[in-house]
Image (cartoon, rainbow, N blue to C red):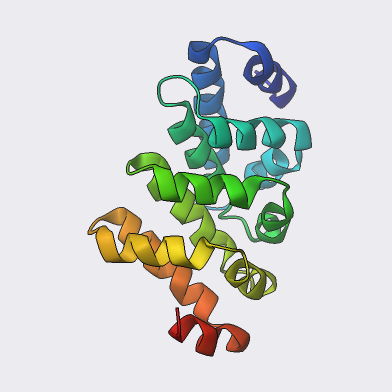
Length: 172
């Protein structure tokens, strides 16, 4: 199935069909290695990504939020997507919501997206300035001992590289 077909399923399918569409998108995003042009192609489909961000925000049926955050984590690995992802309306707020509310795999992947997009120099200061983001990530570092903590530490490390963030971050 092509991206248009997968978009149609995500717009109107039942939860099982939506899960299958997200699984297919994850598979496509992995084809070709750690970073590949499929990740860019998926990200550039604005209608599709708007739907995926909505799934992250609203959840849905069994495992949909986890699959949606996993897809975003995969897509965020490509350097060409990092700034555009930061700028996507609703994305960071939806990820922040997941980081605050979820304790499972969706949280891990949401933190992975933040870690990946914080690698871009253009995103470091703006990410730091998002109300509640650094506080939520620091809370994960304090309370989690697993993979979520590793991804949170990676995000804080990346954000702290920006000179403008160093002193304010130290005071957080």
